[in-house]
Image (cartoon, rainbow, N blue to C red; front, side, top):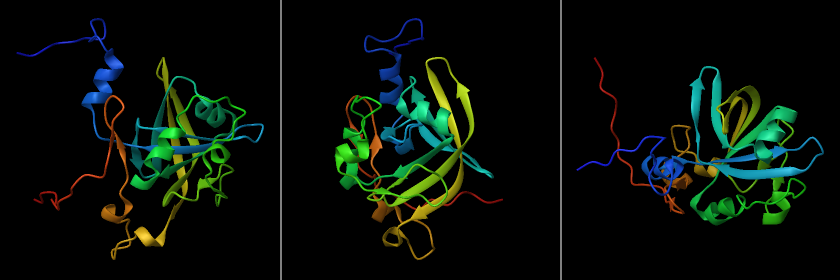
Length: 196
């Protein structure tokens, strides 16, 4: 037997909960921004992916109009940091509902590392950082999709494989699942795409 739900007839926990418990694991963009007043902000976003490869554009969706959204609208810049399993609790802590006057780097004891091109800093403790400038913002009603064109990428040498790319087994990025669940890096296997 299958249970059918529509947005007009959602499950008891709501449609958002059904979406996030079903579409998993989701990678996490740990987004750093700076306000027009110069206050640093840091927050995790699991509605995140690569939107385009050429030009390189990342997509981060803000559910609601949070500080990150406001800062990107005001300054046009943000950094997508990629965290590790060892940073999982700190990443989660940066989702706490604090006021826009609070510096989340300072609150969590994180190091704000100056970016190469954009004003918002990188998270020094995170091994990968994508510096982005606003490409577009798509209003989705209760959410907004922030599209950022990548202008610089910083990667720690310690996580690099022999082929010059990040080694997933060393990086160990966490993910978001449903409810209050976070995921550890999964097992991997090689599976080349079919060729003609």
